[in-house]
Length: 110
Length: 125
Image 1 (tube, each protein chain N blue to C red):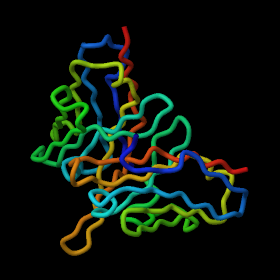
Image 2 (cartoon, rainbow over the protein chains, first blue to last red):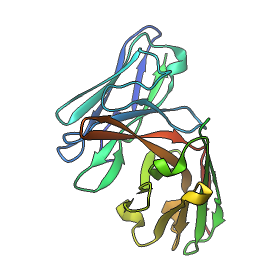
Image 3 (cartoon, helix red, strand yellow):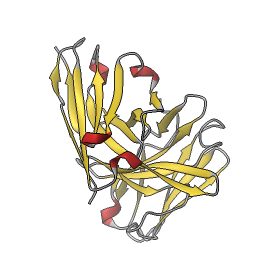
């Protein structure tokens, strides 16, 4: 029952474009920027996208983020096997006065 | 190189206390806000608590308010989480993370930038 709603799973074949959605409300995504994190099994999360659509240095431009209203999306183009991981959206919530995460999306590369 | 090393986790009985530590290096510690984020086994990420650079702003998720206390010692480059009245639902891998800000004019957008590898807390009788 996360405050932000993500699909639990997504999949694609190598080379495809995959998008992962993140739905929130006016008090979180509607009011603040969205960040995306990538997590491989047994490792710590890593920031993938910040401020809705900014990539930290070292993150391939195959990864892109967008936000519209109370929803955000992460797009991965040219899907590669090494992209298989869990992806989380996150933002701050003005009503809860807390940071909130989506439930996570497990991406499988078929 | 930024390094965050958590410690202090372990097996503890319900109702007991535990103190987590996060030792930082490779950056100017007192320039950054720090947070604790946890992940229950096989579950997603949950923000727990955050503290500003000078401890002037402290926040907690509702489920730990009154039980957990976050603190920092800038002289020792360390972050702490004192956990009391532990419950089974507190069982998780606890990560510490730095907060970086992307600023444009008067607006700054924050994100969790560097993460430690986590320390596991198991609450069970």
